[in-house]
Each structure stands twice: as structure tokens, then as C-alpha cells.
Image 1 (cartoon, helix red, strand yellow):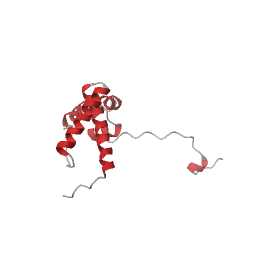
Image 2 (tube, one colour):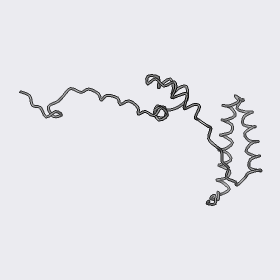
Image 3 (cartoon, helix red, strand yellow):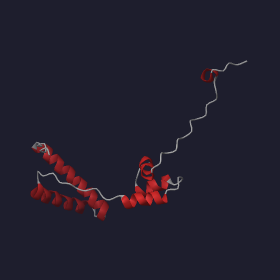
Image 4 (cartoon, one colour):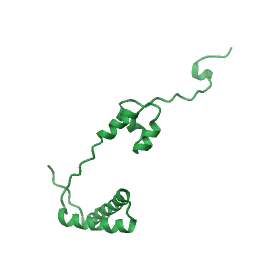
Length: 123
């Protein structure tokens, strides 16, 4: 295991400001708290975390997405990709990755055949 790289004091403050901004957004999205109050809440969290865990690397596990992915596979019909994208906030590519299919290829635009393209000559 490698030692974490040391940050300059300015970089540490920038990281703390970014964390506070992220926490404010999370509190607003998850709880619906007013921005001013969410900012106060986020600042308190950052101060507390810096006091208790400052300088440590912490691991935050990703959420288990197996239920979401199973729902997408169950609901996928092949013609409802846009609906699934909106419902789950995912890209078209991610939906197809989850259902284990490749996205359908779009047909190339039909251009009139030209003698140069086909090698045919007139007459």
C-alpha cells in the first residue's frame, strides 16, 4: 500500500471547499433542504470530518445496483430504452451494457448511387 501524497495547505483548503459544495448538493437532493441551511449543515460535516478523520483515506462503498439492474433487464423490451434512460438516469450505452446487448446499428443515410461510388458508368 502506498502512502497518500501530501497536499499543500492551499490544495487541502480547495479539497475541503469542494467537499462542502458536494455535501450541500447531496443534502439538497436527498433531503430537499433549503440551500442556506444545507450549506450550514455541510460546513458542520466538513469541520467534523476534518477533526476526526483529517489526513486519512476513507473508503465509501458504492451502492448495490443489482436490484436496479435486474429491474432494467426485466423491463427492457428493446423499444423502451428512452423510458429506461429517464427512469434510471442512465445513458443509452449503459442500459445496453446492463441488458447484455449491443445497441442497434442505425442504417446509413441513403445517398443516390453515383458512378464514382459504385464504379458503374453511364451508357
